[in-house]
Image (tube, rainbow, N blue to C red; front, side, top):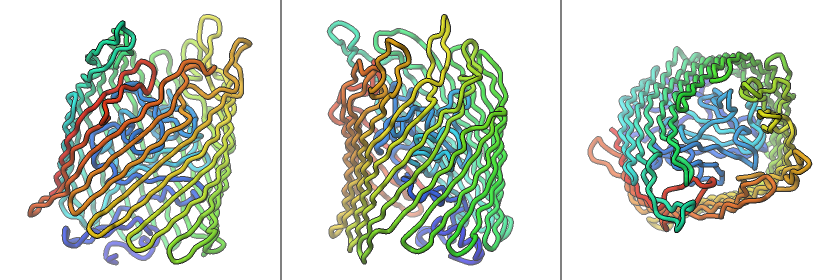
Length: 624
């Protein structure tokens, strides 16, 4: 790395975050703008990183589609381009924290994020933290956390990228990006427009003879813009900022047999400002930000605004010790259709890493939140990694983690009129997990495998129940979660051929431990809409500039009733595609074609919500 861009302190803190660009394509050294390492204090946890290269063929698609197709995660999709909620390790949609450049972006009124209105292309990288993360991230992270990150670089000069994707059923996604950076300053502007007519044919199983009909009320129009800026004031001070405006208009796809014509508009504004100060063994970070969500459902309007102010210090205590101490203040304003509310939250957190030798590593995290003059559950976590065995070509790691997490009641839970319950307790959980990780590398062959077993208990789970003539939220449910996760990554180069295989398998049990009434039969049954099994595998083969892939996913049966009644059939989907990288003078890029749902499978993710059959897409990316 060239010393004219980073001093020794910055270089040490950047670590593996630095990146050099091929000198054949640019003349300036490229250095990634510093951002905190999400994985630094996660020894013992499972964290997967999704790179920009993996996202390239999904530009403009909802992030929910990528997660459903290319990971072992399951999302409850209420139709193509419709509401998509993530469930991790059998928890609910509100038990997953979502962050954008370090800001929590879950809706404070609903307590969750809709992954269908988060477009691929709105961020550069995603990291998925599996399992409890309350001590690291705060409220909501009972089942896990998703981090979306923008990555800027210094020293790249002028950069232009044009992306376009065409597909069946009126899909047309477009994105334009321009960036400029030198040794001290970096800026990038992105604008996009994504459109889908969503007029796919489907079998209407609610009508006699199951006739083939065409979806006529599911159009999606999305547009937005992102501005990223970074300024290296000097060798010890850096400022970075990002702003993201995203607007989505949807015709809400009705269930089969219904002729409802609902409309929904979501407008999201997110802004973050970071200041970093580097010293010999410390990094100071001051962060401020804003997250504004506006939603109009037919004529019902809901708005929430979150203001953030945070500070932390990450420092090297000694050769084997690292520590991070911080505070975050959040002020929330809710102007909902039936109520108005304000809330203040303050969080103190402490993270420590200890590495007594090269084979042992430990992370210890603590967090305490106070909200609305109430004390949230104290959340510690302890994780460790042990290098059991190693030789020149392979190693075995044992990982373990014990953690507590929590979720504060949402604004709707407490203040909705009628029915809100201001006496609700925070949901809380204890979880533990163990993993074995095996890695092997020899010549042109790479193999990585991971097997994880986890158990979790969630108490004070909030559910809405009828109370007289109204519905009212109560801390009733208790759930026991357990499961096994397996992942495989394999790559082999044979002469000029590159072969790769990735596989993810999840076996999930989420068992209700309580009956909510005398006549209820929920106890001992799997939670509704939670598959016990999901399997996903991606195989690719390439030679030179050409590559072909085959993707497979299988989702097991899901029950629709809390007592195990009702059943959604398992389904399996195949996708096939090809890509070609190209260059011409100063231009370069890639062109791709793929067939989704290759065998035209008729399936439902959620009851009576039609999904597209076989469909095609063509994508083109140009870089200048």
